[in-house]
Image 1 (cartoon, helix red, strand yellow):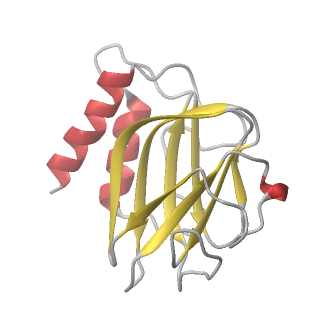
Image 2: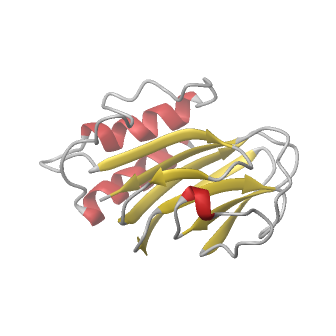
Length: 163
């Protein structure tokens, strides 16, 4: 499983040509884990594969890494393009990661419609190459339903790669 995840992350780096260094105040390379210590060894290895880059591929411009709850949080307060994500769900139920293209202070969970939501299975997670543009800001929140406001028992372990 780990080698498949590392291969998927390597594909993120190679396909996207992620460039430059992490922005100040966000995760830096080498990545040592989020502040709550919930990153698994597999997640740390996958994230550091991106941070290290390979064969002349540099690191992403911005890496957002946090334990996300049902409090709308700015993953990036400026316009950005989301290129990849690695998310872990340590809950015994599914959780959704909601994405908003507005400033975090403008989000009222359960009322403000998300740009999109991603479902993460119980005691699971996911990662993917993506290309989503956020014209205003990227705000995220973790909830028990696609457009709701109820918190998951534990926050989601979220890592978002942007340029």
